[in-house]
Length: 231
Image (cartoon, rainbow, N blue to C red; front, top):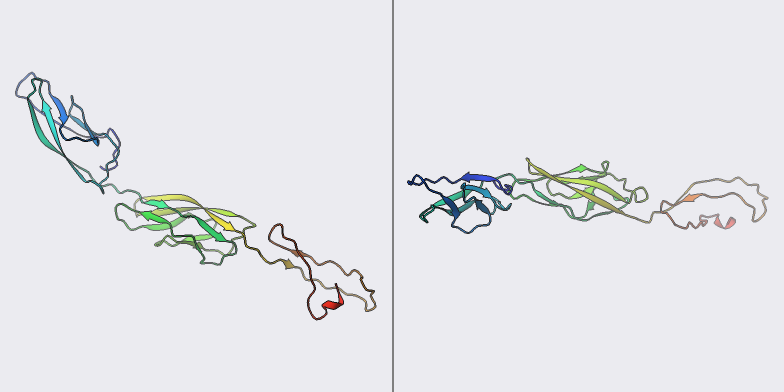
């Protein structure tokens, strides 16, 4: 079978000699580094882990058996590989998304996968970061599934991408990097009751504002029709 490990037994060459007392030696006439032949037992084994049905499905070799006097015989040895369903390959590109992205926002390029056996592939997320992300099962495109991506809460999210050929599957760990977006500050509404005879420069109270972006300097200004009455 393809993908067989080094040392896997393929078969045993059997030879006979009409002379009752003889020592037979086996050898491969065809040069090869893929297979090995035990000169004493005739056992044929895998010599290198390179057997791939999709590349070479059949090997035609010649084997020789020699007795102690130097007389020999040669025959053809055909080794036919059986196909094994290989798991698909999987490559995940860089995944970067701005915070506050809306549902459906595409993240990076589609993941790449190749199946040597030509099977249809299906993509999924084994870990979707709590429902934040989704992947198109056919194209492998990852996108935003939940409008809750916040850089200040988490600057990155771990996901696990899976591709299946219906029989075998391959997974890959990936990280979605969240980029910071400058968000507007918010100010808490307040109302003040004052006497009409209040003196100029009198303290009325404090306005409170917050900025979701760390390290920002908040500047307060007055607006509206009566802005000139206060400062």
